[in-house]
Length: 276
Image: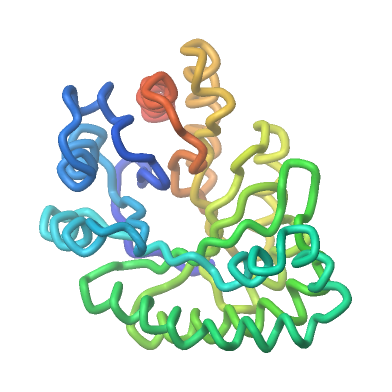
């Protein structure tokens, strides 16, 4: 299992895809996305934070987080969904089955630009690449696993190798249950996955152990579905705290938080996890 360049005691914790303006329960009056994330990382004793490359404040955020001693994780959106959306979702997904080589050629057209984004993150001081592409939902795969393995993973490998050449390990973000894809994700060179979005704890637990078996670190565990209720958030945190001590888990939100109430639940869950 590869190690990701983060510290933290008793276990590393980080913030992932938090929308702007929801960190009030941690920072008081919100100001701007960079200041809020920086203050939240200090307040929560975080080790890392995701920075979406497409946001206008991304470069500033990487610089300030790195200077303050936090590990910026540079998040780049994957190539697949723009290709699908250009056809319309239903027709685009159908094309991955009926025209996989054509879809593959369109993916290739996007890889050079994505490689430039990977290089930009490394140049700014990002420590980890997050390649973000939703391949599954709560009910199973969104994209046929055969297509993912045959067409997507070789192209992901090119981006992972670009990041690796710049001393930046890579993780794959996807919502849903991606267990059938974990061996292919590992073969593509990813060090881990940010996963669990939309899952309940039992499904996340199965995913965690399957990822460990595949040699992958898991980022996540603080599931949004449990964070809206303080008692449930505390119970989840205690369970995740025990799981984190098994190794191979970087505790974080699952990327689904949209409200200040859920952020409050995140704080409660994190405190419970650290108290274990």
